[in-house]
Length: 271
Image 1 (cartoon, one colour):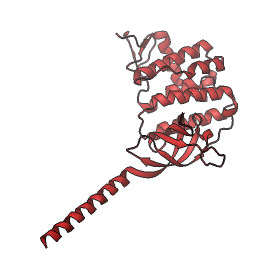
Image 2 (cartoon, one colour):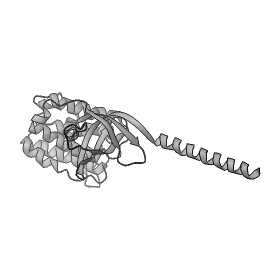
Image 3 (cartoon, rainbow, N blue to C red):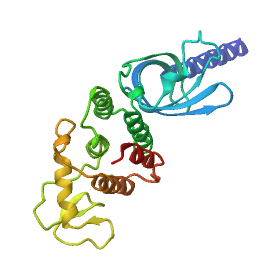
Image 4 (tube, rainbow, N blue to C red):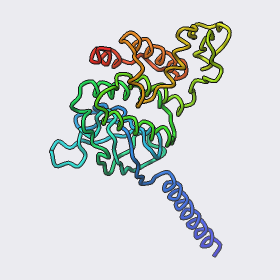
């Protein structure tokens, strides 16, 4: 009788442990729907891609996707071009580094970007830039919505977007934690790139702008997509500003490399 009771108790304990494991597994595994923006895709093996995306619901997520060799497959390679806007259904597993897509469709087909080499170069540059500066980002609806609205604006723009990438990069800093403090500006001050603020004294480190270029920071932050065309910047101006902005990001984003696509953008733009 005692042995039978012990066996029954042990069986009940195993059953409860199994239920607990299943409950924990269910907590970590779920089917999610989310809008997403493609940042980078890399070929993996003969018929797969590893894709990094900025999603509306989970922030940065990496996926592995099998691309069918026949045209009948519902997941197509062209869905994963730089900064394509997607609607996803995926099997999200918190303990897995590469998630799997169950269904995907293009959320907003671009009307002009695929046929415009300059706009395509801008997206290639911004996708490389975003891939590095959004690493580790958790859910951030403001960031996602800003990127989505920006690329939609670019797609619809007919002219006056030569400074788009400059405005995009500076305004993005508001959503990832190091937007410059512009309140203390007055003529003659320097701009401390490390502390993201104006200062009366030249910093004791090399990462700062002298007064002439510091004044341009305030001007740059007054620019937006609608008014940037009235700020007349030369090719050299835009090149210098892009160098300053990228240096600013490299100070605040660990291990951010030089961006290979910047030179392509400069050559195509004829800045």
